[in-house]
Image 1 (cartoon, rainbow, N blue to C red):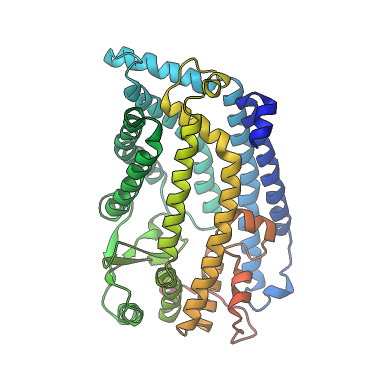
Image 2 (image 1 turned 60 degrees about the horizontal axis):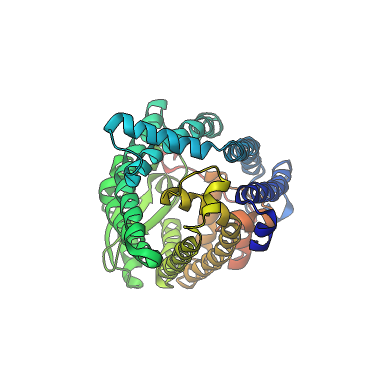
Length: 440
């Protein structure tokens, strides 16, 4: 990659060329998957998994998402190329400096303040250009297929809330990030890495208590058989469960899920209300057995360590580029601001990041198989099978998945791949259907 960069002798040209190559490759994979969604009849291998009716619903939903995805990805690629070609970033940087001076009287010598103003302008631009696509996805595609539950007002309130939350979190971090790089010299990458780790741990700590309540309501799971069964499962594998919540996911969407969070011996489990609505207690416990399998086998900790090593390598590589004047001038900058340098470096690094992302998917898919096997070991064989199928049916997941597309884009194996790995024979030759408890 770096030899080609030297041959092109222009960082901007390198980024544009490689972004187009990656875009073309990903669109080829998207086309392969799109052809799968065009199939009208259920494949024989799905006969005991999903009904013909549910298969057609899934195909229609994913076909609509695929068509819209082609349009959205094309726009994003054109936007990226045009912004780079016409030096939109340096124009935005200069405008933010002028704005800073007009508002506060501070000159561009105050690089941290200048960088924060630039981030505000960049965030506004990104929000304005992405919101129409998000709106269409929510109120046309998701609404058409019965998933969207939020109002237009809630949609825009969420956007505004998210902007304020991001500003409150990122401004202090970016300020510290820039100050440390200036203050610690050539070895800044280590100190920035330490601050990044502290910041991540801080986010993990404050998110469930202060951030998530801004968007969703968590209520303790009521006493009853389900709560008892989950507590018994946690005790059986020595999972330090402290609190058990239900989240009002149905406030925005009818998609369902479950997850856990927390440090050390202070673990919390969160169930989506939509999961409870369409799954029985055995199936919910099977889903949790899979999730807790990640904890028992150390997947969460291992992935955290891998990600931190990856992050350190990014900061180290950035230290090799930060003082490269050509990097800035090739993109139209006449100064060398640190924040801009990091953004430009990410453009240069993106081809490598694409490959690393694929390798991370390979690793995470292995973890998913292991977590399924752990749930199987706990005795949730047929119930895990039915739970996975119900989740896919209820969420209209892709039943007919192209293996190349799945390997590149998904951190989880497809439903058929997971069921084949489980090796559990169906208890009936009829496919599984989903009924909401509230409809019974």
